[in-house]
Image 1 (cartoon, helix red, strand yellow):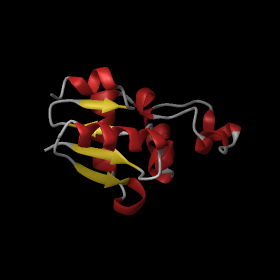
Image 2 (cartoon, rainbow, N blue to C red):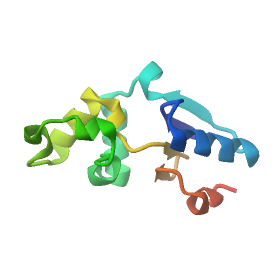
Image 3 (spheres, rainbow, N blue to C red):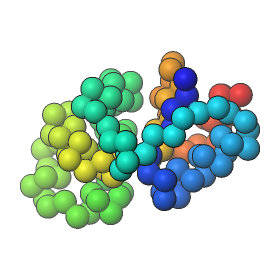
Length: 113
């Protein structure tokens, strides 16, 4: 099953949903704010994509962190930060079972067809 993770009002998530709908790709939408994200699910994302690819250092949420939170990052610290503030996860996350796509990229999404 294909699952799109994100936040419904995020522009990148909106673009991904529109692309999937226009290309008739069946998917389930999982809103981080409404549905949450388990530590196990985040660990699975990290195993597949790496915490460095998941942690959105260009987000407003990242800029609001203090310097101590941003320094000496490792998988454990990054995981805790993302679980405490799900908007630190780069969006959207598209899970197809075999693949995990981070962010919206039409060329990568084409591989779904």
